[in-house]
Image 1 (cartoon, rainbow, N blue to C red):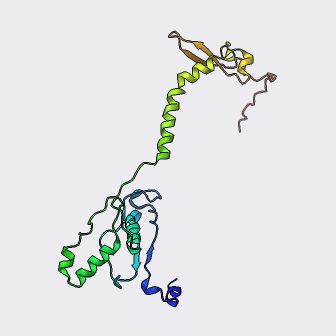
Image 2 (image 1 turned 135 degrees about the horizontal axis):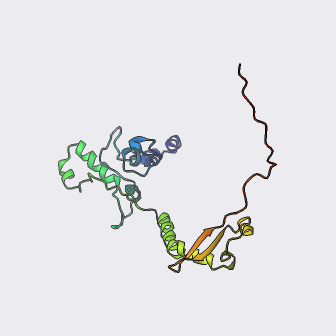
Length: 210
């Protein structure tokens, strides 16, 4: 890209931004993989700026955030930055640092100081909140008592337990308790579980004395 800009004589009048997404933390501080915690490796990313008026081989330590990019682009284009827009133009910070390095104290005094802190917040995910609220509503509408009343209102669930019922898919029977609430009883097969094999006595083996 820079070679093409240089070949067309646009490099000296072009601003170039280079940055990246933040990476994952992998086990640091006992955390699982992710990038949503306010640690350095979660929120800090590289950022390089090249263009007219930007000093070479110069590092700026003041905190810069991604919301500063949009005002910077508007400032480069010569547009007015809306008052409601978050962030500040990075060209102001570059001019401030350049004036300080050249000893222009008066210009530095009349320039609005750059921020020295940044607020990092983590919001709630609306989708997960909607899922939680929906689950709570369903829990109230379809609680255990309601599901039990719905199931026990069916005639097939009100039959008393029988041997046939225990051997089919209807393994439960509903009955009213003393407090007039539905209760369920598991139907068990009362058939004998003894082996129907012939009870032939096997001859006992006697230990032979050596």
